[in-house]
Amino acid sequence: MSQLHPIIAITGSSGAGTTSVTRTFQNIFRRENVNAAIIEGDSFHRHDREQMKLRQAEAERAGNMNFSHFGAENNLFAELEALFADYAATGTGRRRKYLHDAKEAEPYQQPPGTFTPWEDLEPDTDLLFYEGLHGAVVTPEVDIARHPDLLIGVVPVINLEWIQKLYRDKNQRGYSAEAVTDTILRRMPDYVNYICPQFTHTHVNFQRVPVVDTSNPFIARDIPSADESMVVIRFATPNGIDFQYLLNMVNGSWMSRANTIVVPGGKMELAMQLIFTPFIWRMMERRKAVT
Image (cartoon, rainbow, N blue to C red):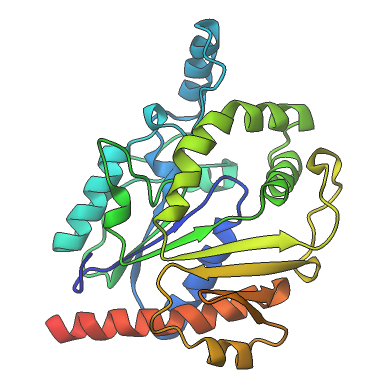
C-alpha cells in the first residue's frame, strides 16, 4: 500500500460484471480530474489466443480436462505482483494490452487475440487502476492482495454469473451455448481454487442477486435486468462507512448485517458513486500531503 502511489483493484470472474464497475470508476476519475493508469487483467495471461488453444489441446491429450485461464500456470502472477509493488514504491511499471477483437486490434495492426508489446506506464499518474480476474490472488509464491489500497470484489450469485457469461459469449463473441458450457465446466476447479478465495481478501464486495427465477441458467434467454435484482454490498471493515447516509440517499436500501447494505439493482452505480468518491478524495488528499 502507498500514500503517494495508491492502487485500486477490481477483481471478479469472467462474466461477473467487472467491466461495468470499471466504467463507474472511469466516470469518477473524469469528474474528479484523477489521472489513472489503467491495467487490464487479461494482459497478464501467459498465452495469446492461438497459443492457448494449442496448450489446451496438449493438456487434453495428456488427460488434463481442467486447463483454464483461471489457473496459475496460464497467468503471469509474479509479473502482476511486480507491477503492483513497483507502482506502489515508485509510480512506475510495465504493461501491455490484450486485443480482444478486430476493433481493438486495428490501431495496432495486429490480429485479434494477441498482446501488444510491453511498454512503460505513462509518468506522473495519480493512481493505478486494475480490473481483471486476479487482483486479490494469494498463493504460496505471490501475495497480490497485499498491495491494493482499495480492493473490490464483483461477485454475482453463480447462476447469474453463468447467465451473463453465456449471453456475452454467444451474442458478442459468436460462441455456441455448448462451447460456453464446456468452458464453464473446464474452469470449475480453478474457479474454486483461484477465484473464490480472493473475495476473503477484498475490502468491499458487490454481489448482484436476481429476484427472478434463474434456476436453469443454461436456458435463460436474457440477463435479469437491474430492476429484477438486488445488490448486496459487504464491507470487510465497516469503520468509517456512514450507513445512515447511504440509507438516506439510496431509496429502497436496507441493512442485512452490521457490515452489509442491500440496494436495488438499479441503484448500484449510485451506491458506488456515494461509497467510492470519498475513498478517492482521501487517496488524493493523502497523496498531496506527502508530495
